[in-house]
Length: 134
Ligand SMILES: [Zn+2]
Image (cartoon, rainbow, N blue to C red; front, side):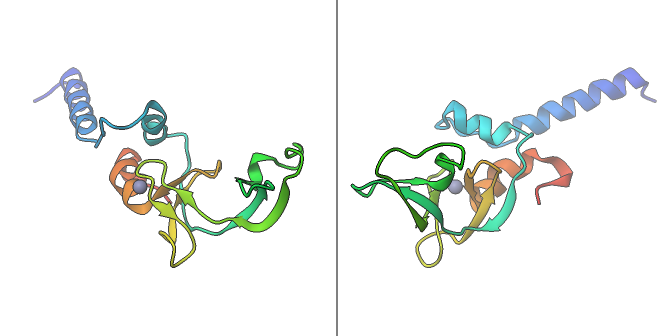
């Protein structure tokens, strides 16, 4: 029969073993690793949709949220409805866009960061525990 101390020790070992099995890539930047391991981020699976963009006279675009209502965009930029036509997976750089250009859906946080479904399932979902994502 095992006592409570032995049970706690076994639970700690089981946690370390589980952590050691979580996939980690040595090519991740610190930001990428932080994104994968930050459990305060709420990821939502959703279809990718074009967003409004600020476009400069030379065609350079920034997403609308780069200059929200409270911030003035640089001189000469104009707002183009649906002008932000893709994002990239923050881990593998897969393109997310409306069909047929890229992956039509993925996972996003509230800061317009996107992960492709494959990266979410491989790297983030195992870290979320039994409750998983949405
Ligand atoms: Zn990816």
